[in-house]
Image: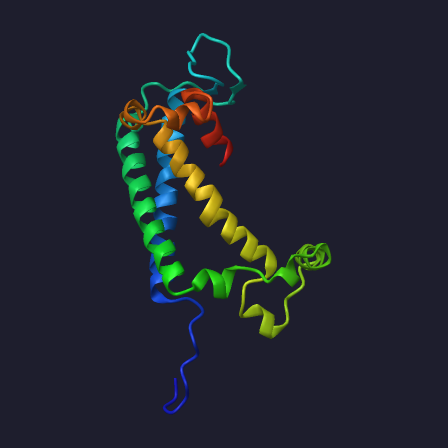
Length: 194
């Protein structure tokens, strides 16, 4: 960059960038280790119990691979990645609330929430139209709604279902699993979110 020129403003703060990449790596570890755990029993049930020979709600077209070498370490990796994602997410949310990032960058204006505006944004995406230059520097309505849904609904639900599958947590707080209708229901819900 030549001397005297102003450096362009970055779109995201360093904290947002760091927490994003840590969460992305942790989520990738969750998907890989979750797949290894799922291969051990690729059937989904509803309620409290499920067994290999019993009737299932959904039979995934995957083989039973009970001897997968990553199965044991996969659980440890899954657990570790979940806690890393949780703490990173908490840092991001606390920072976003403190710096008003959510209000300034993610919370849509009431005037943007009309069906006409939502339809226009969707149609622009379907037509692969580039947004005007000034609009490209901010999040559009679909991006804002998606980020808010992921940050404040899907990630908390992912952690809630993860805790509900943990015997250590459910022995102390049994209500956490009964809200979902049982241990196997929680497993089915968590897999359906992917």
